[in-house]
Amino acid sequence: MIRNWLFIDALVTAGCFAQTFYPTGAHVNLYFPHLADGGPAFQRWQTSLEFINPSATLTAHVRLSLYGDDGIPLNLNFGSGPLSTHDFTVPPNGRTTLRSTMDSSLLVTGQAMARSDIPLQGTVLFRSISNDTPSVELSAPATLPSSRYLSLATRDLGVALANISGAIKNFQVAAVDGAGNTVSTIAINIPGFGHKSFNLVQMMPSLPEDFSGSVVITPQVPSDPVLAWTLNVERGLISTLPSGPLEWPVSHTDRIQLVFNRLLAAGPSVPGSNLSLDTKPNLVTSPDLEVRAFADSNQTVQINLALSELISDSPSELAYVVAHELAHIAQYRSGRNTVLLANDIANKEPDADLIAMILMLNAGFDPYGAAGAIGKLSMANGTSGVVSPYFDFPSDTTTFTGAAHLNSLLGSLTQACGYVPSGYCASYKSTIHPQFPGAATL
Image (cartoon, rainbow, N blue to C red; front, top):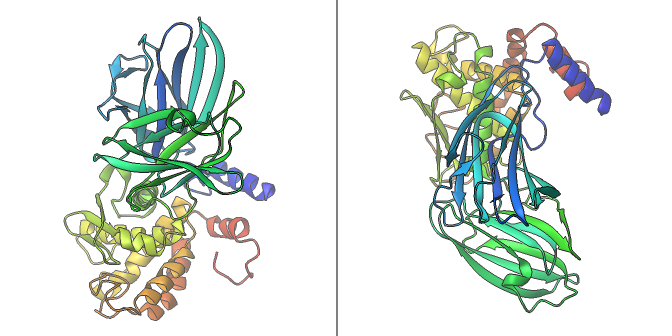
């Protein structure tokens, strides 16, 4: 495995792979559930936000938004004056650091959210300074919202809980002992974009001195997201803990945005498509209770959350659907029914599949995810009213023809290899699918 990833790195350096394979945790939406700045001289806190760009070719453009405990935009000075919104760039393979100047004599806390046009790795560092002498530094990676947060706990556990919605949200925090018994629960209300930080014993004073177990944080409304971070505090020592969001189900809005931006970053790899981050179409994530995705002539791509929920365990499956809709945007922009194939209306969908395969290859997604997406859509289509009858792909008829579409995907993938650098598909196959039979495409 180490050899394979070293090989990938060498391919990226050599230019065979047009895009970077992003490291775990890299995202276009980066959430930091806690900020701490300033305070009295005997204990001042300094927050540093670190961003690394894993792309070897693209500059990241980032907007960082800060909010206080009350949800009101929070002005912090990172060297350019007190601002609640900070815009900056991170160069290819580069790093950008924002370090607070600790202007306030009172401790200021809150949360931060960063939006980038390409995936970044983000880390927050907290430094405690006592009488001008640094004493402790802690770190935590940027995280994503989840439907539940789980962390090991003692009675002094530090908890930060943030609300990423503009409306007030209610959460339940439960302390569970080592035997799995719920010892205490509390309800916490947090204003829109607000934040609350506390030690567990402050909110649950009846916890025994020797409490050792876990905390579980859930929303009062199951569909609301939880954004949290915990800090181990025991016998005067503090240390960071593993991140506690659920691995699955995912935050669908965040995953759609990630896939959408990664594919657009690969847009210039498709000749004549006019797809790129600079010519970004409008993305709509819709809560409509219908499995559907579409693109329209008004330069809008709509992905229903219901569709993402159907294929949420695989970013590559979602990437195929989004890439297919981006291909239709390219067709609208070209003024033709096709971009890469003959200008024949019968080729509209195969042309969109070909563009989708090129985008997926260059964005670091697995093109075989297309078959998974079509298979799941075919399965869901067996229940009336689940898949929209107006789902604009995979055919030019009103009937969902998943089997026919599956049969055409291999041809689209084979064609796509003609639009990437020489040797790319062979290298991709030997690295990503080394155990595949020799005759298999990719």
